[in-house]
Length: 587
Image (cartoon, rainbow, N blue to C red; front, side, top):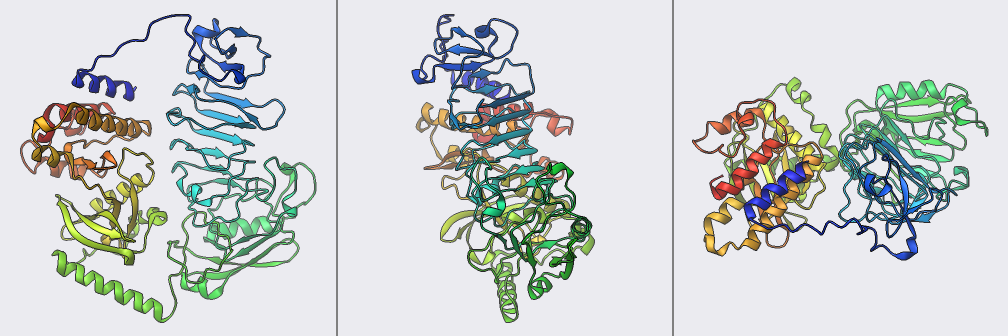
């Protein structure tokens, strides 16, 4: 395990002494739980005293009958299964304790139904978990979920904060948010989803009422991938008012075929239903706004002959909308296009940005924008950054903080708050380096860890102008700190704090299958209040080769297999971590 390897290495360097807990077979790890819980379910080969199958224990670890009601989940690490479901027997909300819940990394699917619980701060999801289901758990806030998921369900809860949906795992393909309390869904990028379910959004957590009894759902802008299923296999759009539904041609064709079918709005099994139910449905799109996006108004016709106008567009780019209205709801599936302004306003904004670009070129000594063919620029995946795109007019560059072989880092302010801005050298940037930069920003957007420098967002007028906006760390990097600080002034408590945060950052990255590859003191940033964090995840093979030609000794922290461009694993980061601890500021 990466966590074990990292901490063993860190402990050895710190020369810390670990004291083992007394090895008593009598001690029960669950004895500190509240007596009101009475019983706990575990899959512990030592405590269950048989082949590894779940058993019920008292809080002093005595075996209880398997029919005993339990109110806590304990250690399931020994369970030789990849799928596990926990469901309340009476399908009613049951509070349980999960302070000692743990699973092996081989666990691929977990389901919790009708249990109310809060995950402890130190809980770690299995590293290979792919499917996670929370049904009827009474959740009012979305719990943290692993970044490895491809299927996630929050059906029948009380979720209402649409911003939580912006932090979904990038690999996610299936999402179910039906039966929740959302009153608005805005700016959500569901580009990777192949199925999404949002049935009965305005009902109680257990789905006892029909969606028709709730208020009409007004959708501001909606763009969906071709096989995006909005309301389960029933494809029910009843009681919906959709304004400015944006879709690509393939979605238009698919939905058009479905709408032309006969949709049976009965109480039969939903699997027997075909087509799209459009009872009390209105769909209309603004022709002017659609045209500004480069789209065309087209008509979908239901099996009853009702026309619905939608905006069909090929290229989807997120921009700020000037035509939004209050109290309207937007579901954005895939990349969204919102117009910034119309008429003269567009001209003024473009002139202002052009002037700022010219001033930047003069002030920062940048050369002209690289010239690439339209084919090269179209091959870039900059559209993947749509959800993190920010308005560049709110960004004010102040001074250069650092200069590298491929990029500079600037101190800037964004909405009055200090941020760090990373920009590629425009004089010699290649299309491969720009794509690597895009990939770096996309990767950073998937991180949610206090030991990793946070991404604020990105701005660009065109791809070559791409800027990565990150949280500002006021202590600089570890190398400069060690260079300007006397060794005697760096206490062991300071060393431990730095090492602890570095290790935790690596553990987080490795749990996601991410290898840093360039761990060194320059890529470890310090802050007087936020502590120590890892940064710089953009090194590519091209960057690596260039880095190794920059000077003798600049790659001493790299594992041999990385330098030789051989297959490498997380152990490459462990090598760099050891070099960092051994050489300090020299790396």
